[in-house]
Amino acid sequence: MLTIKNLNKSYSRRQVLQDLSLHIEPGEIYGLLGANGAGKTTTINIICNLLKADSGDVIINQQPISDATKKIIGIAPQENLLYKTLTCEENLKFFADIYGLDRKIRQEQIQTTLAAVNLLDRAKSPVETLSGGMQRRLNIAVALVHQPKLVILDEPTTGLDIESRYEIWELIRQLSNQGISILLTTHLLEEAERLCHRIGILKNGQILAEGSLAQLRNLIPAAEIVVVQTSQKEQAIARAQEYNFTAKYYGNELAFWLPEPLELKEIIARFEGIKLEAIARQPVRLEHIYLEVTQNTYSE
Ligand SMILES: Nc1ncnc2c1ncn2[C@@H]1O[C@H](COP(=O)(O)OP(=O)(O)OP(=O)(O)O)[C@@H](O)[C@H]1O
Image (cartoon, rainbow, N blue to C red):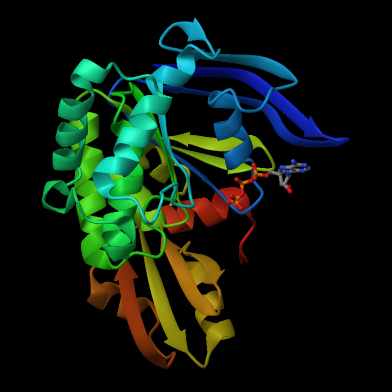
């Protein structure tokens, strides 16, 4: 559905995208992760033909990007793109007209879209009377009203409570099941973990790692991670080395990568003689992989 090949972009002399390539299949949810300034918005703007790349190709539905391809893309930007005094229906009508939706199908499509985002009963409500979660869903509806094949969701759940997040995650899964491709940016690694079929980790305009969660997990030689609280950190690290555990600091937390899974009692036995205040086992999470790929955490 979307193929990006060797995209380069500079502002003045600063290169913000460097040979960026990625591919998204129909129905695939692709998570583009990266710190502030990594180049996500620049990439999105180029896909939407709002910004020109210096070099490289963007192919959408087998066509190079152009004004025509804009119609098969829907974008829900970080900031809601809504008119607060207009109703849900009026907002969608406004955007349906911008996309040139045929008047004969417009009303039906607006109703279908409102139903998809679970806002049919609020069709006549002004946006300013909706909760934050509802406004966010309407913002996504704006991206869907013209039945795009590729939907770009820029941090769709930032600032929302957990229940609103669940609703949006379910909506995203439904879109994927309908064959719509999703390009999702998020700083919530749990969101990417739960939703994305594949993830690309972007830093300084380059994809440093890409794959499914299972594939990304292979980048870390750890079967599981054990976080310990101890006042005897140096001794714990020295002991861990004897067992081939890799020591890592996540913020102030001392953790060890275990090359093989161990029973809790076996782990405790390895640290015998060292006072452990707490010990917690964790699976390898996207946050561990992300940190490893984007920065060098402390390693013993
Ligand atoms: N119009 C511009 N002129 C100059 N530099 C720009 C311009 N737009 C973006 N940049 C720079 O390009 C880099 C990439 O920015 P971009 O907005 O694509 O990052 P991002 O990954 O979307 O960040 P965020 O998570 O904060 O949205 C940043 O260093 C930014 O300062």
